[in-house]
Length: 322
Image (cartoon, rainbow, N blue to C red; front, side, top):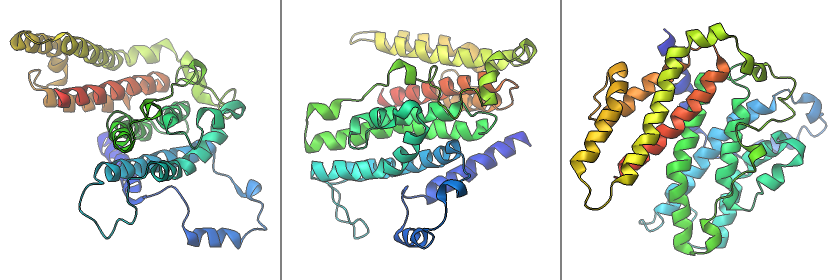
């Protein structure tokens, strides 16, 4: 029953994601808003910022994914359903800013000390990747009390996959128009705004999720096996990168493969997968991530899940390249 509930939540989020083509209001919606100018919007607004951000994140990922696909296929035959044509860098960057504008509006409100415009300036594409990561960090602090871990896992999967795959495609498309150094840059947030450090006024001192750091020892003991397997997966992914990086021209392919098989064998013994088949162990790792949804310690589960997703997507990308 638990697995069915998890799948149902995932499909619901995916359905929302698929139907949402742009994070901006239609002209009809603007007209409706104008007819209610006398409404006190501040008083009427009862939706928490973290809820707005959890809706804006998948929508901006959809916008950016569409953008990356179109700029990558700009040499394709004309399509009457596509009215915008890429090829002029200035206009293409303006369109890119438009695609993230709604997401940035929410993010700016949620970031502390008025730092939003500094960290995520609207007209600088070099900050987009950084700001997607910051958004997941802000949402993480509301897991599991206000945002269910199953939903947050979906946000992390789509965001990490775009960052590691889609963002590269998008940047390559822009660089083909004009290979300027600025397009090669990706900003890195200051340490205080990275996931382990980031706090904001809507969370600090008020969110029960911040108290999860002090979860009881009994909770961690009961969750120990699942967390240990999570750590083993992340460690194996890191070592896999080291093994692949050490493989040079003239190295023994059989020896490299043997090292990878030996590395993943004990993990596949627990996950019931074939350690000699990357895709088998890759898909088996999702079973491990699903088991995190059942942990008692929300803090430990959300942090372990983030690391699992990040390393799984990066390793998948690396093996696709190989």
